[in-house]
Length: 207
Length: 180
Image (cartoon, rainbow over all chains, first blue to last red; front, side, top):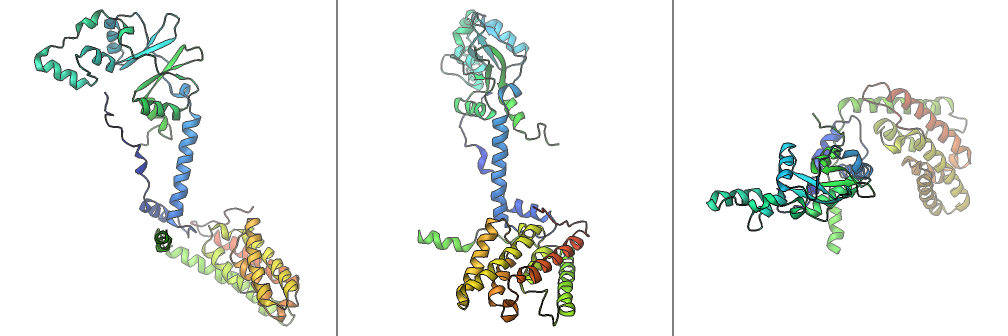
């Protein structure tokens, strides 16, 4: 769910230490004609460079999930919820009749439309149910996707870089973004998990 | 401001790790053999012919090419380029500014550093090679530009050959890192 309540600084201060560098230098036999501080500086630049290269060169279409579910504007919320539950997804794009992406529905949208107050956190919803006020959300069952979707949809083109997408996730505090072609037709979806996978420099976890 | 200025003098890091015993041993062997050969040629072959094969700056080169063999400063390009360019600058400077030895010395060293930088051949002993051309006395002066060839170019080449042969014996070492 939504764990990013307080936006923390990106963990750039978790950086390599002088000791890391010193120990690494000890692994290399022979006299190294460089101070640990200079080596650290070089390492940091090299790391930033690699990160930039990777985040600029990897594009949305490289990492997106291509088999993407979607619903229409007038799909009943009941059906939307069923589909999301069945496919175990937490967000789904909403399409116009012509197939263009017009919005996105996430778990959060359901929660906030079902609670009386601004309940965008799942536990707040649970708390309300447990307080015996009833999980009375059920005018919702007759509503349609367009009634609760977040719109206009935040979308990216297929050539958006991982860097840009990460920024959107961070700034808009969202967890997925639909990928479209120039005309706005849905091509896929990129989630935070896809970004994490792309950020592992080797493409697979270090075992 | 002033405080920041003095703060910089405290340093920011610790010295690099010490090398192991094998590194010390191979540095010793390389330097011993390298200097042995140029010194033997100098004192047993060239003695009395008005020539020499050894100059003080070779001692400094030995530190680099046998003791710090990964250093960019110790690579063949730097060893040969640094010595030869500096020798030419040193001789030229002496011939231009003689008898103002102080000026010739300063110009020789500073200009050789600049030239070594510009040609990517920085080799600290080169500064000494340039200086020796100016303060080395009559025996050096009368060589003229020959100084750049014997002892400088030939001596440095001999030391380089020894470095190539000795530094590549142990598994933990390789030399050079690059040629050009």
